[in-house]
Amino acid sequence: MRTTQAPWILGRRPALDGLRGVAILLVIADHTGYLREPAGGIGVVIFFVLSGFLITRVIVEARDDGTWSMPAFLANRFVRLFPALLLMVLVVSAVMVERGFSPGLIVGRAVPALTYVENMEPRMAFPVFGQTWSLGVEEQFYLLWPLVLPWVLRRRRPAVVLLSAIAASAIVMIVHHRDWLPMHAYALLAGCMLALVGQLPRRWWVLPAWALGIIVSIRVSPSFHEIYVYGPLVATPAAVLLVAGAVHGSRLLELSALRFAGRISYALYLWHVPLLRLTGTTYGRSAAIPSVALAVGAAVLSTLLLEEPLRRSWRVHRARAVALQGATT
Image 1 (cartoon, one colour):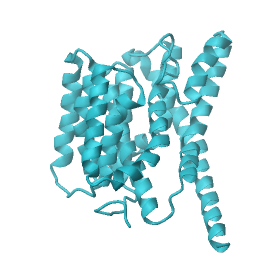
Image 2 (cartoon, one colour; image 1 turned 45 degrees about the vertical axis):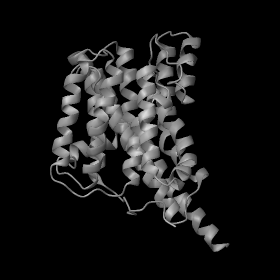
Image 3 (tube, helix red, strand yellow; image 1 turned 180 degrees about the horizontal axis):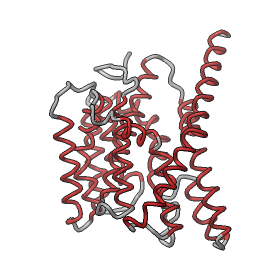
C-alpha cells in the first residue's frame, strides 16, 4: 500500500539546486551586510522547507518501493553531511591554534558543532561555528521524522495532524524563542506536508508571486520587534510555494550560476561564517568580499574533491550491497 494518495516520483529537479543557490545567497548577503537581518534567517527557512520536502520524498518513495531502511537513511545522511563539516572544523581549529586561541575555547566551539547540538546552547562569545545551529536542527529532525512519519500517515487526516503541529511549533517559537528543534519544526514540517499532498498543478504565476513574497518578507521583517521570530514565520508560506513551483522547473532557477551556487551551498554555508569571524569582516560589506571569495574557493574544493567523490563511492557501495543481498535471498 502506497504512503501517499497522489504518488509521484521526484527524480532530479534542476530548479531545486537553483533554489538552494538563492537561499545561500540570502545568507551570504545578510552576513556580509548587503542585506538587513533577518534575510539570512529567511534563507535558512528556504533550506528548512526544502529539506523537509526532499527528506519526506526520499522516505515515502523508499517505503513505496520496499527499499526503506532507517540505518541506510542515517548512513546516507552521515556520508552526505559529516565529512565536509569535520574538514571545516579541523582546518578552522588549526588556524585558531596557530593564532593563539586557547585550547579550551577551541574545543568548546568545535565539540557542539561536530555533535550537532550547537542549537541547544549557542556560544555567544566568538561563535566561529555559530552557523551549525541549523545543522543541529536538521540532524535532530532527521532522527525523529522517519519514526514519526508512519504514525502520521496512519491518521485519518494527516494534513490536519501536520497543520496542527506546524501551528504548535509557530506558537512555541513566538512564546519562547530558541533555536531548538520544536521552535523551528514549523518550516521543516511545512516542507513535509508539501511532499505528502502530491505534485501541485503547474501554474505560471506561482514562482513570480511567491518570489515576490520572499522579497516583501525581506523588506518588512527588519521592522518587526522580534525579527528572527516573525521574519522567518512570515516567509514560510512563500518558501513552501517557491519549492512547489520549482518542482515544475524554472528558467531563472535553472541558470547555471544559480545551480552551481546550489551545488556548493552546503560547503559554502559551512565555510563563510568562520572565515568572516576570523577576519573580523562580518557585516563588513566590501571588506567581507575577500573572505567570501576564499569561502567560495574552499567550498568548491570541498564539494568537488571530498563531498561528491564520497557520495559516488557510497552509492556504488550501497548498490553492490543491495545486489549481493538480493543474490543471497
